[in-house]
Image (cartoon, rainbow, N blue to C red):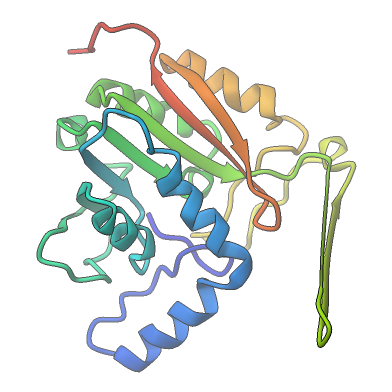
Length: 233
């Protein structure tokens, strides 16, 4: 499932190359590039050759995965918005697709996608990933826990600064986006804290082996493995 506004575009651009290019530059902003890069970087050193990318958007991560030497398949409810003969595409809704269609990959990459489903429904989607039995599951979701991000860059011609401060989100509940395709929850609010999110991963049968945070894009990443070598039927 693709995002809207804050995330990957949900529109099918078809042959409208100008509109697609404009959206590409809007979405893949400087602050998001580190987030896109981290999605690929987390696979480094893992015994992974084949990757299923869920929610590829306009395909920047798909392209990076391909360039890094992975065999990539993408899955989205829309037709592929990035065309590369080496990248297969499954046009299907994650909520409806059978777990068998997600099987057979060394890793499933699902970033900035699950927050578009109801918090209670995410358990079923994680169980579906577990049934598909990937070697690794790489996830990211928005993180709005208490944090301070400060950046300063100076040279003889230019000064740049960026400040992001998030506090007290855990005291109130997340207000879902008005857009039906928008965010239904974010980690860090009351009832959807980091411990609750990681409890969902554990309940689905995944063992997080690495956790990372991005700064300005404010997401939390987990690299997970099935909690045992036993694969579900």
